Length: 494
Image 1 (tube, rainbow, N blue to C red):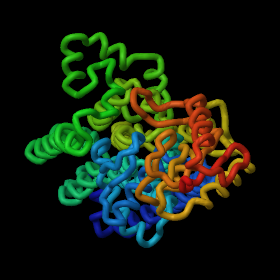
Image 2: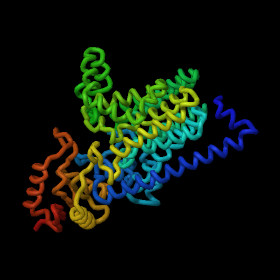
Image 3: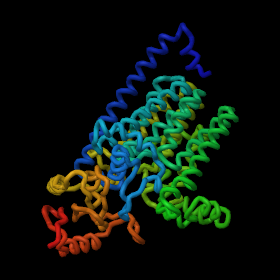
Image 4: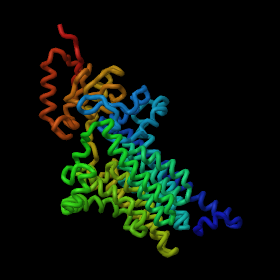
């Protein structure tokens, strides 16, 4: 039992401890509410200005909408087929949004839940700090550093990804496991596992930590086996059952084996290929961007920090560039352990240095937030925004265009308009049309998803050719055109 826990249980000091904790807890709560309010306002603006597109907000909305209408997790693939999304990613936590959708059917529901949930991750950091640092002020400073961490705001604003919910859930799981509350930990672990097929590695890491750092081998081994088992079942059973033997995401690892077995075989037969993949200049910058705001505090608790290594390996081994961009949701398996390790690591310093160390982390994080954060008034020299800005005239044209499409009918659309049209069963992305009755085409948005042998990317020539083909087709009638945005409606042939 730490001195903090002991003081909290001593009748003579209980009142003083409670008063101090309540004061700093109020600071953390207030900061979390303010952060969530501000970040949601930015996410709402991103959505209203068509910067949150079908990939990825729209396909999540479609999966939730389909679940709420009796077709669990169904969506339209970029190739035009209908499929359960478990064939690509195992994130059944989306099904829990269906009851919320009945009450508030809006894409902003998903964004709001994501932002609010991520903000609540400040609480377990504060609690971990109180226990290990034995100083409520230092604990609160670390919780504030979490909220100011620039990549947290980026991933909270970046559309909606179920795995982003794992950030606070893993922090709560770490807190409960550190408190030896296994029942609450299991509940959190189940929710974490439901956010992504790869989160089993994070759960297994917590099990290893519990076994070695807390000397609980029986429970730790069970947690470790359960975590690894979940990921194996997802990769070898669930995804093939719903998506077939081919998985488009495996292609991102083609240079190192293209599959979990292939990566292991490459590690054995050609370790240099693995080393080259994880030590590129881009990977080095990625690690620097992630860790510099914490000034290395997490290194003082290497056991907890090491849980982030498998996710870091997954991100750096891939050929997908966004995986090593800290603004994206791939940081979900990293952030919780960097901050939990920082709280536990600073506790290893002398008591008199702990508040100063926590203040240093907060100060450096605040500087990084001002320079690299997504705040619209402070663009700074850091990475550009995820989606480019569009003019007010273009936004108005897109709003008028999507308003013409009746509810529920099948539609084909470019990416930017997709999130505003996702509440339907059939939503095709250009150049796929199939049984679509309407087409919404944004000439300024040439981004297309994976189609055939072509990877996702910008294809302006294909978009122009598609529009030319539709205009020449007597089956389609142009009903709207403004500022590069066109709407076509299918008509009956003579």
